[in-house]
Length: 186
Image 1: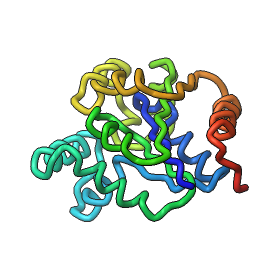
Image 2 (image 1 turned 180 degrees about the vertical axis):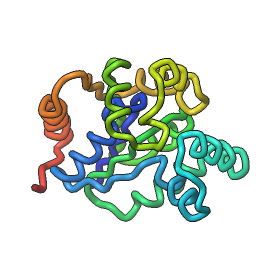
Image 3 (image 1 turned 90 degrees about the horizontal axis):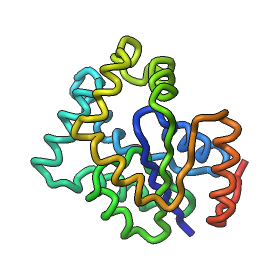
């Protein structure tokens, strides 16, 4: 039986850490809303920056419809019978589409903005992360791709604080997986 876990949260709240842990411990197929965007940007040899991702996402949605990325991820998840994680929900329409999937659950992860800022600088997922100021990091929450995140977080079935240790995060996830009847595979 397939379980689909959508993961929503602000930048550097722990979405990727959750998806990676569930992949390792539970054999989850890990998908990201940024996956198709990354594929396109790399193929076109356009720098992989947050601004370029936003521009591409907005262009794709404006040209091919608001569900274009969700449809791609649903198709990618279709061939999996076990656990699937979909990291990075940002738009209410994306959530509505995903709610139609049997076995779908929404998880919100949250952390203090100062903790998230520090994580962002350390991990350096995007080239600009290493040099961003706190003020710019804080202002980035007002971008078109970020402003609806709190609305989605409020609808989450599961809410995980992630201000503590990685072990605490994993323990919370293990509890959620047990409640959903998803067994470890490691």
